[in-house]
Every structure is written in C-alpha cells, then in structure tokens.
Image 1 (cartoon, rainbow, N blue to C red):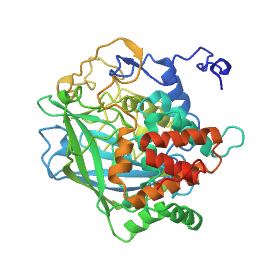
Image 2: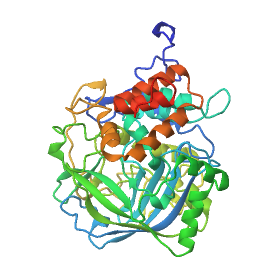
Image 3: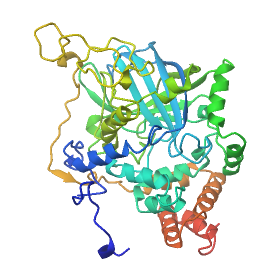
Image 4: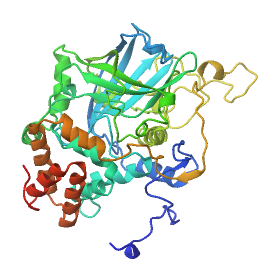
Length: 488
C-alpha cells in the first residue's frame, strides 16, 4: 500500500504509536525502560490473548532429572549450584512454539527448551530454544512476529503468506529462518536436538568481576532430524510422537542427556567486538569464543501428572540466582517482564505456590493474599518493620555487576558494529556449514512452503531475501518457484 493510504498505528487508547520497531532505551545500547507504555501495553495484552493454554509453546512434554556441574567455573561465576561436583534437581519442558495444544509434534517450528533448576538459592529458570538465535532482536516486534505465525483473523487458518510477509520485511530474521528450513527445523525427537539459552547472560564471580556468557546444551544422543516427507507422514501416523518418545524412553529406564558448554566473553571486549554481542539474531563464532564444557543435564523421571507438572510449570527468565544476571540483550530484558506477567494471568497470581514451581528452599516474602493463596506470610506484613521480619541483604545478594547506563531516551536500533549485517551469518551457515544435500533440502523446503498460498508480490520479496543470503540460493529458490532459470 502507498504510505498515504496506510493508517497510523495507535495504542489501544487511540494514541499514535511512537514505533513498531524499537523499544524505548537509555541510549541505543542501554536497557529497555519501564516508561515505554506502548511496549508494556503490547506485551501485557499479548500475554492475555489465550484462555487457558499458553499463547506460545502451548503443546509440550516434560521430565524431571538433574544437572551435575563437572568443572570449576568459580573464576566466572559465584552461582552455588555451579560448583564442581554439585548435583541440582531440574524439571525440563520441551515444546513447539506456534501450534496449539492439539497440533502435531512434527511441524516445522522452533522447539522450546526450558529448564527449572531447584537450587539452594531458589529457582533458576533458563528459558531457551533448540536454536542459538531468534527471528527478531527487539521485544517491540515479538507480538507482531507471533501473530504472523498464528491464524488469520477472518478465517482462523494458518497462512504462509503472513509468515513470509513478516520475514521478508524483517531482514534480521534471515539467520533463524535459514536454520528453520534446514532439516534441523524438524527434530526427530526432543532427545535428538540441542538446547540453547540463546540470549547473552552475565555471570559474576565472588570478586564482582563480570563476564558475558551463552549456554549450549549439546545432545549426547546425537543430532537427528526428520525430512519434510518423514515429518508429514509422522504427523498423520502419530501427532504426539515427540511426547510419546520422551515418555516411553524414561519408562524403559533410559536417560536422555545433554552436555552443557559455555561461551564466555570478557565484558570489556563487548564494545569493540565486530558485531553486537547482545543481538539475539547472531551467534558468537566458536573460533572467537570456544565452548567450554561445564556439566551434564540428565532426564530420568516422568511426571506423575501431566497437567499439574507440565501444563502448570511456569518458567521465567527473571528468576536468576546470585552469580547470574541479565545483559543488555533487549529481547531478554523484555522477557523479564513478559513471562511472569503471562503466568499471573494464565494460572493465577500465586502460581509460584504450585508444587512444580515452588522452590525447594524456604520462602520469606511480604507478598500476600490473592486467589488460591494457601501460605500467607505471618505478621509483620510490611518492610521495614521493628518486629524481626525478613530483611534484604544487598551486600551478599544484590546485583554484583554495576553496569554503567547512560544515553538519551530514544527508540533506536543497537549502535552499529563493524560486521552488523543481517545476512553475514545466514550466508556463512549456507556456504560453510551445510552440505550440498542440506542445501538441496533447504531449497526444497522453502519452495514447498512458499508455494502454499504466498502471493506473487511476497514471492518476489522471498526470492530477493534469499538472494541477499546467497546469490546461488536465491536463484535456486527462484527456479523452484518458476521465476527464472534454476541455478546449479
């Protein structure tokens, strides 16, 4: 549509919206500000769209197990559950992202990989995916992205044209979309895929020294994937295949396990790094920051009740124990608000009192009352007080990394770094990582998907999108869609 024909985006109160692309931050690289009413409104409204299933990650499976730290990482973090030899109970939930509760397990979709560590300092939640990157880098666009992957308003049907319309207008999506349309876009089982924290986090040691880190859980079972044809056949034969596989594996007494490897970057390196290390659409090349083995995640026990444990499990990235803190990753900062807010709506204000979410340590909080509260704090019910109520100890448990924040209040992308190009990393994935067979399947998967309801106008943008990743790839997609000659 011509610009003069397009209506202006507004808030739900009809006020013109300041931006659909960028959150309000303290400087281009600074933290997201709570005063960004439009962002808060979008996230809060989005979190209340579905009753009662999750808006995203609706269908999943889960299991209990443990994490055992095998290496001394005290030089990087003071987190007590990350001491060598320490074993910590965990609950893990796997999921698809876009589908509803009744959707098939073997659709082409990222998979959720969420871990709840029941540590001696309270619950630590690491809420990631089976991909090291994501489609966007700013939380302002998250609600719109998910809407493009869901169902149309007029007929209630999924629409590939919406997906490609959003992706081709959001070039930062290219890395994740490339990954998604390889065979790894459909894992053979939850056990045969990696898990990633995806975001950049901050580790802080006992001296107060900080390090930026990324989590990689590498499957000990080996990577296995379905082809497009295999996945479609399995969707018809057993739409609950992934859930069934995990359950039956543990019933047989076989464990599923992953090795945790960490990438670690000195804080001082971030400003001059060749691309923005907090950009969720990019990975840190292993040659720059080699992964370091830290420990092992093992799942060995099924839940006793699916609803009570898997459906009512509530993971929130804001649950960080001493020694682990956020980074300037804008997507992570947005999730710190969004996740607990959606839990309060979906399963109630007192969701943390449910057994699956309750920490394994005593809770001393001044929060009280609300629907279904069964463990109210005793008097006094306020702080500060003179009656020996609980008191915070900032010296022992406060934020350990004093991150400097400065800058004008703006809506802007991250400050540009030398190699900040949305197509460099997907190009490297296509040219250097994928085999020729992988490339052929990537093209076939893209073409098959685009042929299903994508308009000619958007198809042209799809071809240009892939040409920017790699000229040969764009030509092959164009050939498959009947636009020009297929390139060899």
